[in-house]
Image (cartoon, rainbow, N blue to C red):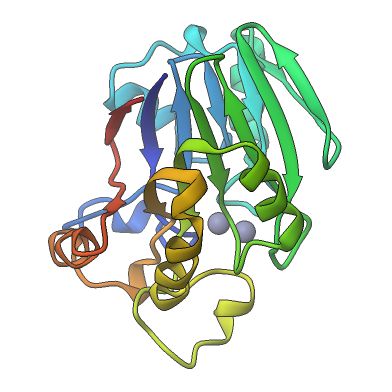
Amino acid sequence: MELLFLGTGAADYNENHRTMDGYRRNASLLIDGCLLIDPGPCVPDALETFGVGIKSIRYILNTHKHADHYCEATVDTLIAHGATMLTLKNGEERAIGKYHITALEGNHAVAVQHFVISDGEKSLFYGLDSAWLIYSEIDYLRAHPVDYAILDGTVGFIEGDYRVFEHCNLQMILVMWQSMRPFVSRLCISHMARTLHTDHLTLSREMAKHDIEVAYDGYRVTL
Ligand SMILES: [Zn+2]
Ligand SMILES: [Zn+2]
């Protein structure tokens, strides 16, 4: 399974920040060039930047309708080029092509779905956007261990920020990671907020001490 992070930033990144050092597009992930999680506003630009043909995208999943994750113009463009939007209920499992997809209810300000995606050999948990994972998700992951998990690293090492009730700060990530290690082989954070983080290098060095990867736009992972 080949992962390509098309965007790794929170909603406080926009076009105006394009020229800044460490610019991140809104969070989005492409699996094997064909399965897209979150058709946000930056997806067309990311596809062009990272050399992905838009016609290769066959399936679209959407975690939730916040504007950094769902953009109608992007959806229309992808569908016009042959993609299909997949809609699952919480707890539903579905086979699509070589993939087995499970939708799980997440913990966010609005209704959000997280996904466990398996290609029969490797599996991935996509957990954006989210504060603490809710028990039913952990219950599922304990029964279905994954090779790779992507969690919400929005808030940085900041304490006392109200957004931890819909996103994670990194203290929360460290606590969850300790408990998730038996059923998650590798952990990566994404969805970093522009205003709540240091630069990528400092962040990734800090998280490397804990065996946690920090995604950046264009980051490719082979599972
Ligand atoms: Zn978001
Ligand atoms: Zn959101």
